[in-house]
Length: 232
Image 1 (cartoon, rainbow, N blue to C red):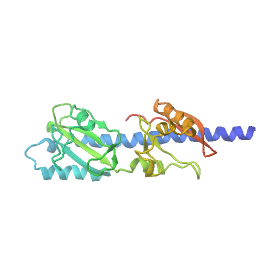
Image 2: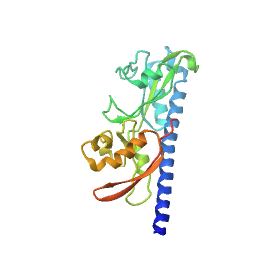
Image 3: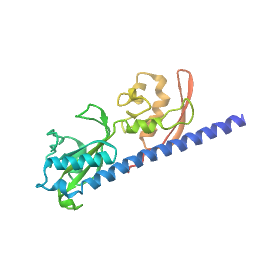
Image 4: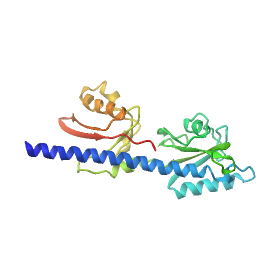
């Protein structure tokens, strides 16, 4: 029994440490994206009416490529894209950035690709002067799978895995794309009582807690550690 307790304690420590490191890594990635889009918003050419749209698009594309983004976009003050003509005025990431704030969106189904995407947006400052007059909004879209890629890189044992949920309990990153934006354990537990122990852990996750617990799935005992992702 003492050996079991010791090995179990080591497993708990290992899981909790890994969960904390994974949460920190996600936060660091988001912070780097946030800093990139903030810097782009201070490029004076983007707010200069004399600069052709083609040149502005070249600048945004260059930044997106340099920082490993999927794509970038430039919006006017009404939320309309100078590049594709679509309106993004209803998106929270536009509404927040046009008020002068840098924003990391909750995962959103992209109007462009239909994929689950995270948008990182910032105000475009007139003449590149931060804190002055907002002249538009710029946003980046990181690669759709960047969160999943982080989850896939986390290994404790052969049968271990990592995933992320959002504030509603919906899975937003996993080692498989099949569950992303589809699975919500707490909702599923309302119909399937075998998920109730895991659902209780998910509720504690959403409360912003770091902890460790166990649950049973199909007769197999599972162990879970979790930590909140720090806001960048």
